[in-house]
View 1 (cartoon, one colour):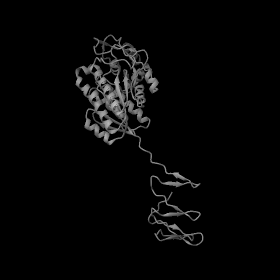
View 2 (cartoon, helix red, strand yellow):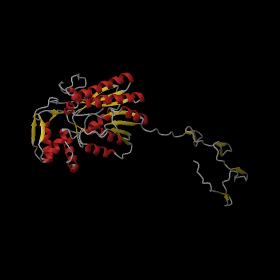
View 3 (cartoon, one colour):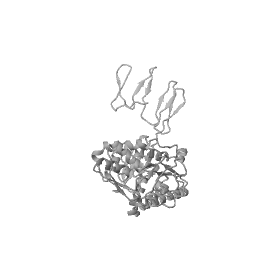
View 4 (cartoon, helix red, strand yellow):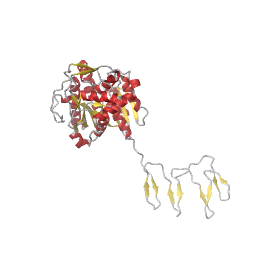
Length: 404
């Protein structure tokens, strides 16, 4: 390796004097003859021990270094940048945790979110604050409904995969405002798929829902027909699944559809029962309970869902996967009792009629995810309930002001 010299540096001579670094200066050899100084030319040569000249090493990507035995050692190639993963809805409950786990493995994440006010944005900001400043994370405030904005993002970044976790969620609210569910969940998915096929991005993970299984025999398996959704929310998710299949067939995009089952955990959605019930029990506010509490859910802890979503990034062609607890479902009444025990308080129940768009039970068959993705949940629901309560207690000072 050559040692750079400053313009005024000098080399010592055999008699202790200094030799100026002139282009015409010479160094004394062992036999008294002068060795011409080495000009700083790309074609200059260094003398070898046997008198032959060793060509200077040009700064080429394909240059080689001589080894001790005369063989050439290939130059070390530049390490290519790891392509980023686009995570939509990154300030959302599942997406924020998924982005966290991707960053933990060294995968860069470009996150996009429109910060809509469907629920209290303070919870979204809290999640985003946990990601801000992490190496490899870039946040872009934007909307998957905005096709020109998406096209610009795809022009500026090289993506290895797109994880579409942005969505309008909530069965009941979809009956009040069905149009926004179609524009976000269906049209937004189409926008992403169109950008992917234009820019050569070949992996798509689409978040879907267990709400599609309404009225089917349990445990729900992916091969069941889900052509009769009972809410605009479920219908919009079905539309997204079908559009993803079309782009798989037309353009070879590899698609994993992941159907989530009742995801809960720390910093969860404040419109969902675990967040609401914990807060209401702690504050002594009556719990609004639709039905008698006998309806059951296949509760799945958010960390497990995030790991399953990342596992679904592998090549599968086009496949649908249930990501759920896979155990016997837990009733809403049992969940309330678990929260009461952990908080040391009794709940006050304000019972309402069962909502016609709600499902009585959900229960996932997760054999396919186990066999093809190597995934299974690690966190027992009751352990997850405890973790969720502990997070609430640790953050109660600001959570008390969150609208639920």
